[in-house]
Image (cartoon, rainbow, N blue to C red; front, side):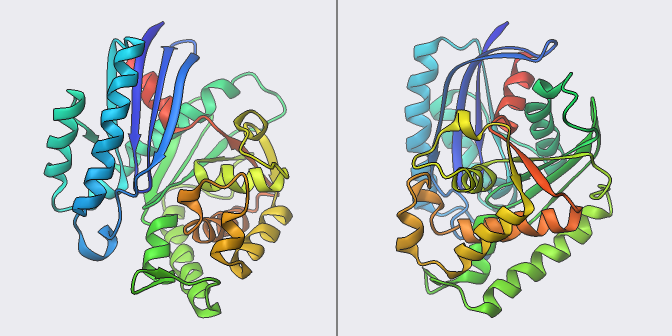
Length: 314
């Protein structure tokens, strides 16, 4: 077992996992897991650059994480950055800032690498379960991109496409900095059109309809699961490996489309940073289930962050 610190910096959130990990056996003993919404990808789809205030929010979170890493005495640290920093012209500013604070250079990974880490993190603990049919289709809905990866004991095919809850919200639901509440029908249709085109791209590489089990990762899936389970507050143990039906996802997405900011913010299990972007995320989730033909999704709390931890231990 190696004590590692894994950091996943995406478009919407930055997350830390400190754990003792064995990449051979798939054993992972979690010591500290936390998440902050920093919205690093604020405006990137429109400007192509990371905003100064978004960088400062991210660096502030990195300083807090540096204290946690030091406290636990992690032997290895891996910092992985995904969609927003891939797309930004000024990503060197981001790299320098992280290096100064944490002493490690962020690895700006490709979408395919992101998919592989997500697959490892989500499926290592599923080995030996006979109630979940293989192959698995792992879907990770992020802020700027969504990853699709199919495999059994290893990855067989993977594709990352540029649809995510933040990107779709900024592109189609935001006018003059204000998110539509609720969105107009034509705004929702524009999201559906973008998602359909992205699914067409994903399907060129990944056989979306051939999987035995759909596994869903990240905040959109876990938030929808919390609501489907009727949780009054977020409970990761209850959410982990819960099974949510297509009918329930369709019902929740429909409610989001008719809801206001205040109504969504009143949901106890909803992180405040997801209130404005969950509607777009739910539309992506629903479209994925309809395209794949999945009648249910298995929701996992273990995802790319756990995959990064195994990678760090190796």
